[in-house]
Image (cartoon, rainbow, N blue to C red; front, side, top):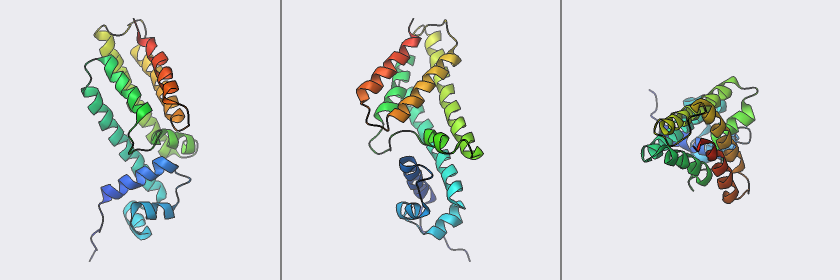
Length: 192
């Protein structure tokens, strides 16, 4: 007879995601995961197969959570410009309960050159955000908020690049004031 799990799989996956986000894949050992997740090593293997599979599931979870949070913020926006501001503020200010930076960026920098699965998930995460930016820019162009002389997709690619740079820089001691200056200059490309 199979034993029932004595833990919530979603809860322990959330804990693993947080740890990978804070430390990265390579630096996070199985011992770290056992301690942080609060379950036995055997339970990690039984539920998630191995560290790599656990990391990929954590990346998926990260994408789901960040996507839902951004969508919620954007729905609250009264204009396309405000929606973009929300995204940049979210990138720079973050929440005190989440690590700095971006798990997709960490996966891309650490693993993408030799791990096709991590590369695929990080690239998909970047593409999803870029599509979101494209949609917001089109909203602003159709509503007359933004200049229409440039292609929305190309503008989104540029803003996405800025956001990725800000996510890396936010992990350093660079001031938020500087990060906001960078964001403000980048958003000027949309002005009429």
